[in-house]
Length: 408
Image 1 (cartoon, helix red, strand yellow):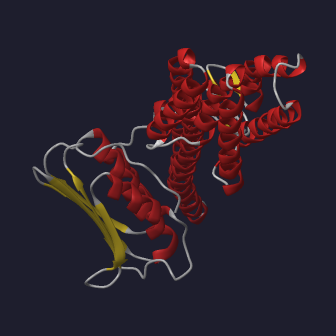
Image 2 (cartoon, rainbow, N blue to C red):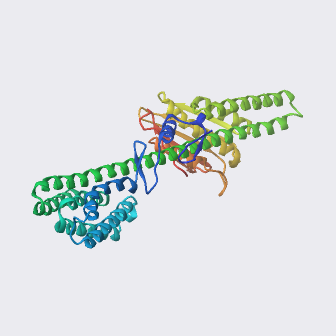
Image 3 (spheres, rainbow, N blue to C red):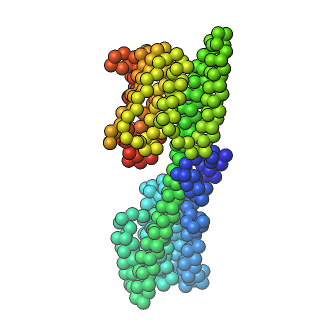
């Protein structure tokens, strides 16, 4: 048994199809990331990642400490306000709910106002807050309109810088635009990677669930039919034991053969390589019906069938005959397989009453889904002349994609 490291879903590798194994390999290789951190290439990105960029404001802080800034109290309050808003915004930018919240957008607008005020009043090192504003904007606003916003911030930063220091206007404008766009691109990419990993893990879980369903249905069909045959032949052996020992021993030998064949089929089903044969199922159906004191009539005509079509029709024969033996109280059963160049039709009828309401499992429902996925159909109900009838139809050639089995 293997367990997906992310989902914790156990699975049995020996009974898996190649599709399921590939999905589990993807699950094993998926990393995973949880909010408020996202990751790419094994690295984690969070609000702490954007904090070191506050060092761009060291020049303004140095001017403030050295007394080179007029009205230092205003500058100090402005510096503290900007840093506080920056930390508040960048940490909320990594949580989808808070990133789109009105409070985050208002805090970003307040940052823009403080940045414009400080740059317009002091200039010099204080214009370095524009690239920081671009970082925060790129972290919060990601969408089709971001480029226009980035251009607007770049122009605003360049103009205010030009009014105080014309030489740095182009650098500040370019730095603001670049910081806005690059930050948004990197964080959008990390979110995309996180979503892809989550989708891959979900696909792996669905594949495991599908494989479990396939496996359970195979076991249901295998064991239901086999045990019914064993029960019927055991009853026949018990009836014959007193008056015809040789006939009873023949029935016991059939029971042994059926049991051995069931073990082989279960092993093959577990390893995922079981291939049904329509001819084999028809022979078994004839033997089981005879042992149940029913008169079997089996007819088959038409061109050769693909392996997949034979396997599906074999399951239908197995399930229908099992239901006939268990529930119908019939005296005769007819199995007819008629094929053409395009379609093959299977019709199983008996003269019994069919399953009573509430009797029986999900075998026919599961087979209906399997045949529908293969481009065919299955109908079960009262026959036109009484009794119970099962009709199945499939393409002669294997044209449809592999069936996807969903939960009943």
